Length: 483
Image (cartoon, rainbow, N blue to C red; front, side, top):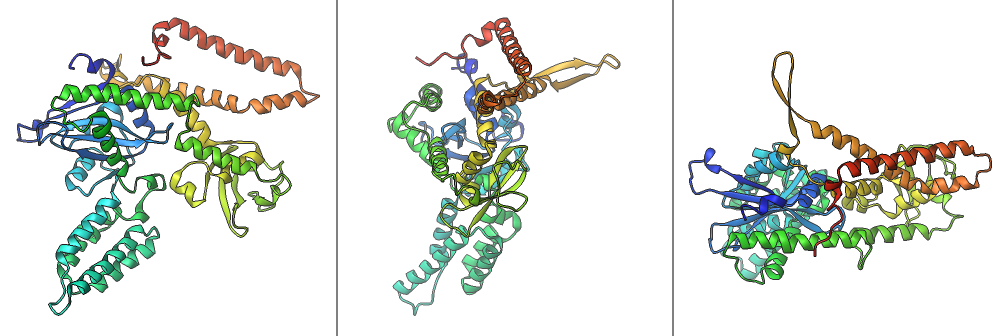
């Protein structure tokens, strides 16, 4: 394991005794190159631990899970077998830069995350929040002896329902008002009131960890960490066969071979359109189909340009476009267009899911321009194809000739930026193929201009082939499949 695992995976170990007097603490983690690439693209994650992975009761496995940008399903991007919490190695080795992390209600996890990522937004899982509230409410809420057990149960249920409404509220003003009203309703329940104020509502920092008004729109899918619970359930039932793994090397083998192979095959299946669509592709297809069913003669009446007039197909303005609801004639949604790219929509489902809705596809059909999501998805797919480079592999030492000082710079970053820019332009060229085809209908087009463009494209392809031929070993296994 010590020899084969580092050959194909990013492996990290931690000496926790450096900052801790405990000598029995340990951490061992690893990621595949594919997991590193998915992790760098994603911004929101779930973090949780599972017990019972070995004969040692103190050993747990932490998994970092996010939604895969291709399959739309939830995918693990890092494994950590440890009896302590630490995330510093992910930041230092794999460029882990999260914006949001969902965890259960655990202060040690909060401390571990904030020590490595001081500015990340930490959110508690709503399922664990509600469970903690209900458990403490059952233990701390009491009524006078004159009340019957049925009356006490009804009173507790009433309070639990109010807590649910607080938890589900997304409007900030209503959210804060409901908290105040709830506190006023239980002035005589001092034990629970003290718990509720000190643990949940005592400061804005506490409110931000669980209140929906403080959740990023991009993080709305991560209100609970049920996805990571589902992942652990699949791991133990399907891959472990409900048996306890007694050796670490056996656990590593299952994760790096069986599990990794499944997720890799799922990505390949989606890209090859083989079998059932992924959930994201399915929703995209349904939304595009719904937009295509709108009749051409009523299409202009559903669209208002940024100039605040009923649009014509000749409009090419950037800005805020208004699209009429498909189901309500009095409701309109705002769509932002920047540099002839459709960026976002004000439809609530789009805000929560961040998947192009039928309103975006309707404007795409009308304006004949692209959706930014599609271009970013294609660019991410191409980025997923190139090898993942770890932090220490990207550093190169440059000696200053004047004073002999050594400066460590990320030389690979310039290459990455240039290649990403090239990928973006080639993707745009692919999406402009309809415009190129339409040029055949233009009678006064300059043939020499078309020939010049053809020559430039051929030169680009020749240069790519030359680089490929000079680095044949790097490209040799790029398309190999698992046997």
